[in-house]
Amino acid sequence: GGAPTAKPGDTGNSPPTAQIKTHFLSSDIKYSIAAGSSQQNIPSTDEVALFILMDSVRESAVSMMMEPISRQLEESDMAEQLGEFVPGSPEEKRLVHKIDLYLMPILWIKYVFNYIDRTNIVSSAPAHNPKLDLNSTSTHPRAFKGNAKIAGMQHDLSLTDDGYAWVLSVFFFGYLLCEVPSNMLLSRSRPSVFLPTTMLVWGALSACMAASRSYAALLGFRFVLGCVESGFFPGVLYVLSCWYTKAELGKRFAVFYTAAVSSGAVGGILAGAITANLHGACGIAGWRWLFVIEGVATVTVALASYFILLDYPSTSKKLSPEEQRLATLRIVHDGIANGSVGKPRVSHWQAFVAAVSDPRTYIFIMLYMLDIGAGTISYFIPTITLTLGYDTVEAQYMTVPIYAVAAVCLNIIAWSSDRHIERRWHISGALAIGFIGSVVCAAVQHAVVRYVMICFIAAGIWSAVPLILTWTSDVISLPPEKRAIVLALVNAFGNFSSVYGSRIWPKGDSPGYQIGFGVTAAFLGAAMVLTMSGPLLCRLSQACVCTNDADPTRLDKTKVK
Image 1: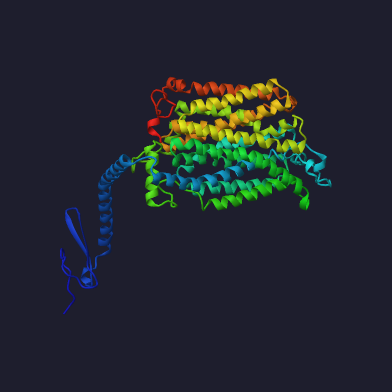
Image 2: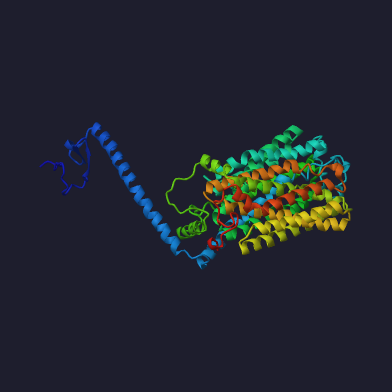
């Protein structure tokens, strides 16, 4: 009448209490552990421990045996899907449109605020104007020059001209120091979290700069701001290069970069409005209100972007599994990512060594440094327009057409570059436009001629920027971890050129600024020569692991859409 007793090896019927049997071999002894209703079959503690240990070993061994087989099957499936992939299908076009909607608008807005927060120091720092004293009753807009640098900070913090130059420059020391580590982290992080968090922190820092009471405090804020902002621009470049093919990337970089160009106009008008209307409100200087309002607006945009941005093609939760598969196939087919499923990723150190040991990295660093060094004219465009005979308010608004012309030219040249799948000659052409404009400005003093030429200088310099970065991503595309570091290095050293670039426009050179225009022409001329000789330099460096044997820095048309 007792309960049935489980016997070793018995697989027959069991009572409802369920009999669970597990077999394994150890030291040529077969153990059988059964859980049933009979007390006689309850294993000892040692038997349970031994069972758990041996079962773990067994599962690990099976996993090790099955992993290569599984990897081969997945890679075989990837190869089969690549063979069936047809670029330009209606499904792919719909996917690209969806990617554009998730990425481009919010990244564009974020970059506008990034540039405004970086350059609002220009709108705040100038020499003292008595009309800006808090005790003054004058609030007429013409008492303020916006980007003409008289919002009052230089007087309030007792900044010398040299001190102001260091306030501008120290930002780029932090930027250079942290840019590569930041992109290393991003390549292992979720962009939808990393980029908004970066923006949240720099927005808060920008607002806190309003509390600066001394030159030293302002230097500290600017250095930390440079460290934090260093993760945004190169991070966006890397993320975009992970989503778009080489034939799509130039236009997206260009559209993204128009945010910087547009912010020059929008930021100046905004700065003028804030300092003119809020100066003295609640006993607070206008330049402090400028930092607070723009910082709070940045934090607001950062919070919204947490819910919008995508991650990477194979991991973004905002895409369906089928869309993830298609997004991954696109970039593998284009040579932006490899199709080896399960292949170990390159470590941070391996990627860094690969980046710094590739001579092409230094070619692109030098090219970008020359163009960005020439681009420091953007810090002084408002001041230069004042020397052309405009009054303070007119000078503010006369900067807008300059940025507008640059934005239009930038997009036209980028569209043509993607359309013809060519970078080198488009970059050279843009640099040539800026070079000619700089030479004319250095030689001619006529106000109208100078103004028109400044429009062309800005158009040439800023049209080349996104194409240089696109070219870098095209040529050094794999592995992705290396591409992330190369883009960070190029952008970091390029922006570091602003440290010396900001000093080529000394106040004593006004109103002609022959030194500034002459050095700008030299930078652009050297960049033009470097661009045209790029393929030859690649061959001489014996680093021609590129897309086309005939031209190491030329895109292979057969590999892009």
